[in-house]
View 1 (cartoon, rainbow, N blue to C red):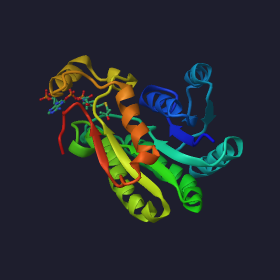
View 2 (cartoon, rainbow, N blue to C red; view 1 turned 45 degrees about the horizontal axis):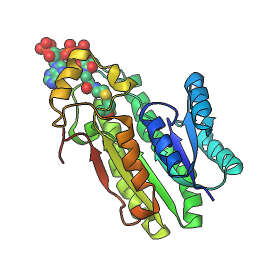
View 3 (cartoon, helix red, strand yellow; view 1 turned 180 degrees about the vertical axis):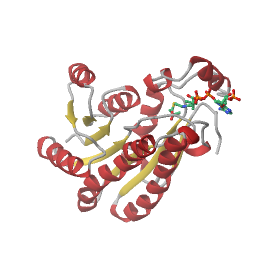
View 4 (cartoon, rainbow, N blue to C red; view 1 turned 60 degrees about the vertical axis):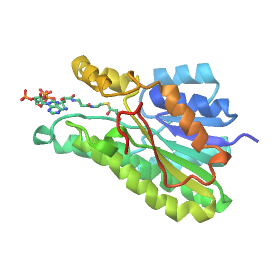
Length: 240
Ligand code: CAA
């Protein structure tokens, strides 16, 4: 029987590439999205997989959403927390709203989705959780105190959860994408982006599939001895 994987923000960008990689591995994917119905429709049409619309910043919504997915598709064995947002700005101009919004969307969602999925994985004695952090959660980035705090938080969160989950057959790992060619990086001022690309030894932005590939490996049964790891996929831009 196919394994069931949840990918948050799974219909677009890096999330879509992750969904496609897991589908290629023979999994059934439930792609979670919050607002973009058009992208969700396109995803369903092109992959034949299901989408589920709920807000991952809302714990009750996540509990209900996961219950619905399990009822429709079966028990979830893979969770990929990929959904994330930016609200860039220097700290001395940042509103409290932009601080809380980013922390809630990136780190809060990670808690909510794990809280909804982990009890079932513990009961069944198997699970794979992959949380997307960022190169900027590792090294910091001018104009991103909110985003960097949320992404660094994901690393600590995942290390703690990995320790709690290891004895139950559940691995919890972190992927730190560098600058990947998606809508998020397209929104960066082209001059700033050109400076960033100069700092990448591989000499280009990453491709979404390059994140899909590593998630596919971590989501597989082959990765059974990898837990609490933080894996950089950044073209050599930051070597920690
Ligand atoms: N390091 C040092 N100084 C910098 C700097 C940097 N990286 N970037 C800008 N500055 C300086 C500027 O030169 C300027 O200095 P002066 O006032 O002396 O001229 C000052 O800081 C203010 O810069 P801006 O005019 O750009 O300020 P702003 O308020 O208009 O914009 C900003 C600030 C929105 C943060 C803008 O700099 C920006 O968009 N930076 C890019 C942030 C970034 O890289 N985001 C990554 C998004 S992709 C992502 O997050 C995905 C992922 O996981 C990798």
